[in-house]
Length: 256
Image (tube, rainbow, N blue to C red; front, side, top):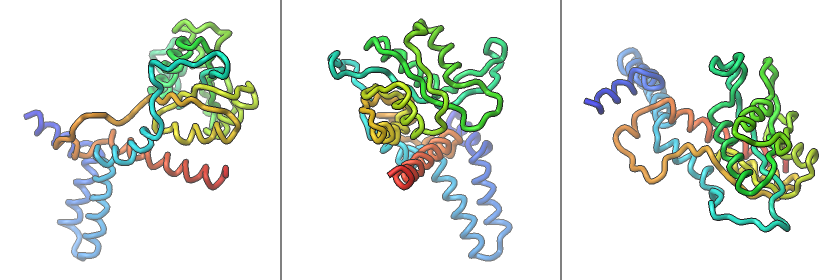
């Protein structure tokens, strides 16, 4: 009964309902075989992009490009990292549960900030939050919101620094290097975003110790019939992966 309800849910909610609609449209309303094949191929493509195995196939190479920072890692004082740099990843604007309806960190950004706080405490390092506004819709600066979260977690203000002008990963790296002069940092961002981030920082003269977080793919979990049902979560993961591959290509062409 649970499996049946999951299948029904997958077919009723997007993107499953769109896939089913395309199939029904092709089968019952299209007379020309060529048009029918085109629409069925569209449905198949949308289905493939919306299932967990394809999402994992695209995301895992990005997430596994650099290993997670081992908990037993030890850095000597001389030549060790000078700061933990955490990259912004978005806000929830005017979130009702925040005091005064202020902005809150998105789930992805919050994971990055919590990971950065843990590393900063472990290695007694300051935190640099890098990220500005791509477009200004009246939202708060991400760094200001992150500062409130970190203060609530006990980080002294003297150990928090903000870079608020960058609009993309390359500018994160360039501005962080020029403003603070750090030459070796622990870099915290989502695992799927780490490969491009490390490249950007190293191209700007900053040596990086990667500390990926915010993984999207399950590990050591076998696929079952539910894994091949379309879901918005899998489609979102596929979008994230394709966006990141495009970013890697764009950076290679624009920032050689």
